[in-house]
Length: 189
Image 1: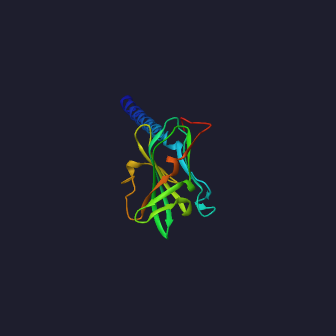
Image 2: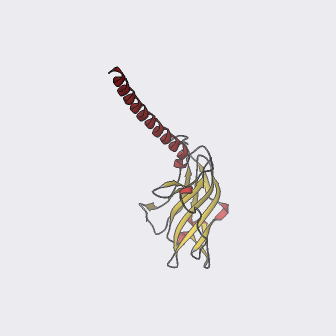
Image 3: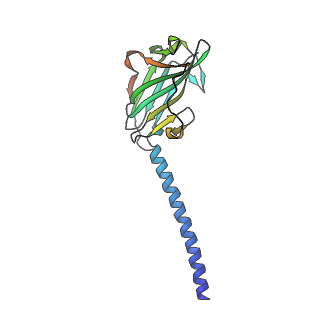
């Protein structure tokens, strides 16, 4: 009888031990996921004069890229969807980095687009919106941020846009956007 009681006790203790180990494993995975995303969650964008995805005055006035982390991010690529001559265009604005604790503002009236097969056009003269922002964090992970999502780029087939007939690049006047230091900078979510 004592042997049966001992076996039951051992079985119950083993079961609860396994449950505790599983919970600890899940918590460790959640902590790891939070740490992996720590810098990426502090990098974002917004377009001036766009409210709930609708342009307030025909076209956005400026593009704002924001990095609230204490480390720079690199390989910046902004995908812009614009309409030119009744045709949807996918435009790319590329930059080498986004400084730490900073906001970079690209004014629409200071951006030109080079449209494949269609010459040049001023961005401010086209209806446009930001589709996504891709960047590389301090650990070398590539991220894609959209208006409603943030995901590691390895989950996507190709983070770079194809250079198709309806594509183009955006060239900021004066070599880039205006950099502003932010008043606060977060290192943890």
